[in-house]
Amino acid sequence: MPQSHILPGFRPAISLTLFYLALIVLIPLSAMVLKTFQLSWDQFLAILTSPRVIASFRVTFGSALLAASVAGVLGFIIAWTLVRYSFFGKRMFDALIDLPFALPTAVAGIVLATIYQPSGLIGGWIMAVFGVQVAYKPLGIVFAMVFIGLPFVVRTIEPVLQEFDTAMEEAAASLGANRWQTFVEVILPNILPAALTGFALAFARSVGEYGSIIFIAGNMPYISEIVPLLIITKLEQYDYAGATAIGLVMLLLSFVLLLLINLLQGWLRRRGGQL
Image (cartoon, rainbow, N blue to C red; front, side, top):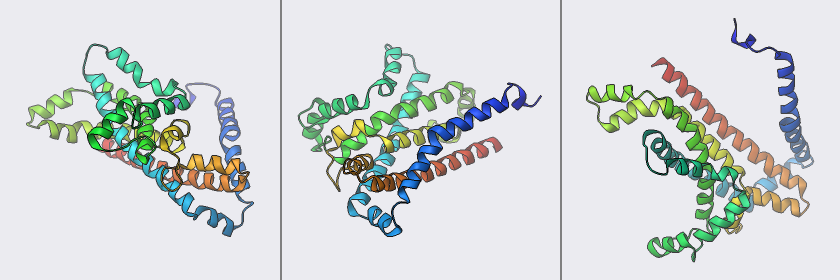
């Protein structure tokens, strides 16, 4: 029996799916596109090519890519530790990973700004040892994005590691592979699609994050101003067309980057299936 017929009710299910996509996704996005069409092409380009807008895009996407990369590495290490080792307080540590999901973003931003400011508990130590200020600088944006993106990476990689057959590692070791060769040739190809998924989720969350960033960023135009804050500023100035134009470009850039990541992920899965 075809698997599509295992569960009954295809027509109601597909109707509900299309209704949901239209109501929640397509109609709001269409409204944003139509609002942008109120601008002429010259006005549209003038908004997007202004130095302040370009700087905010650079800060947002550059910080998001860096934060997602850091979260990808740290997330793998944390997921590996939780799956492969038993230690005192493991359940408590595992529960703390999900804390950014439950914590209001504004509260997270206040907490991060408090501990990472120059006089804060951690920020003061970093300032004294490394001479680097975290809060109210672009580095603070990266720290906040790592905080909110890390759980996505951990929870994406963790199930893959739980299902991973350790016998493959033992076989590689018996054939003379060292630890690095075992990781690169055996472990990495199996977890890379999941790692890319976690990276994409962390990146997408970081690009659209607002509440936890504005308290620690400093919000200086051309330096530490993110795109969501610039959109809010446009809306407060009743420049709805300008806000939707920036939002549309942000949406398209995010979609293209996520599409490329998904295509790479699919290619890796097909390549892994052929090996």
